[in-house]
Image (cartoon, rainbow, N blue to C red):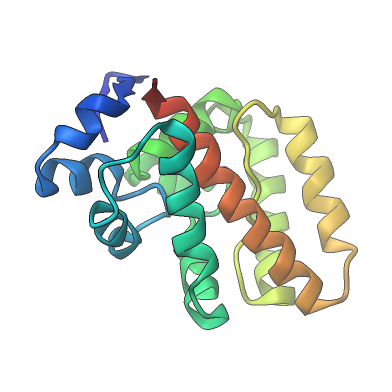
Length: 179
C-alpha cells in the first residue's frame, strides 16, 4: 500500500488502470485484511471506468465468496487496541486506522479494557470483533463493542462482521482512490 510515514498516497484511477499486475496487487492486497487473492481477481477486471466501479468490483468479489471464506477473512483482522500487535506491527492500513481512532494511544487501563472485550468477544463468537474504526473515537468503539457483546445470536454477529469487513474495504478504497 503506498504509504509514506503515516500519510497514505492517493492514486488516480487512470494510473491504477496502467499499473502492472504486481504493482496493482501490492497496492491493494490488504483492502481485505491479508486476502491478496481478492485483489488478484480484481486485477483481472481492469480497466475500471471510475472509482465507483473499482469499489463495486472489490465488494462484489467479496460478496461472491462462500460464508466460510468470509469468516476466514474476518479471523485475519487484528484485535482492536491489541498492545502486542500494535507494537509488533499491523498491516499498514490497520495501523493507520487504529492510529486515527486513538487506539494506539490508549492508557494502560484502556488497553486492559480492550483486551477484556476482545477476549470475551472471541470466546463468545469465535471471531474477532470487527468494526470500521475509521472516523470513530475510542468511546464510540467501546459502545459498539459492548452492544455487540450483548447479542447472543451467532448468525447475526457473522452478518454484522461481514457488513463491517465490507465497510472497511469501501472506506479504504474510497480514501486511496482519487478520480
